[in-house]
Length: 115
Length: 111
Image 1 (cartoon, rainbow over the protein chains, first blue to last red):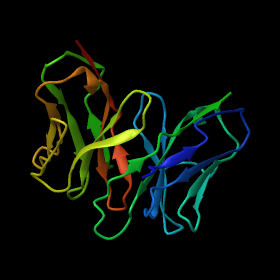
Image 2 (cartoon, rainbow over the protein chains, first blue to last red):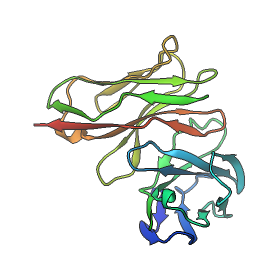
Image 3 (cartoon, rainbow over the protein chains, first blue to last red):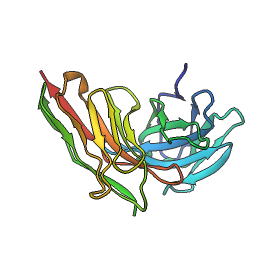
């Protein structure tokens, strides 16, 4: 079975540009979360979506937005990129159903470099 | 606020040595606790978890016990191997399914 898949794996942007990162959850999983992992740090929560609705938002500026599609895939968008947005962006899925033990399944991430 | 604090690394051990990576958390109530591992070049993988106080999670020879008295979830392994070299993250889950991660502890095991 395919795990969580993310694209692109690596990308380079310049300051002020916009980026879209994509994620496909594990088949059957209805919840998708996005995390930012800066080098040398633990992942920081950005968003959680369940059944196409935003269920949680971390302490990130409005330049960050996301959405979830009917097939449960998701996009993370970042506008007006800053140097500090350089990081590994991780997507994680979970079943999201009642009784879910809450384990997150992570993709390998999209490494964004902002020059 | 809610947070997870784990032992800073890097940690270097000889093969077959005993490993402890400390982790403490702050939270209201009794959140589910997790250890994730990130091997070189790979994504985060769940290593073990505990969903209530006094539970012991275990996997691949690693263990961690949920201690509500000390709000801790320390990771231990009796005999590490070279293949255990990785970065280990302690995490707790909020009621809203948001995860709070520690900063990670890098472990290198030398033959």
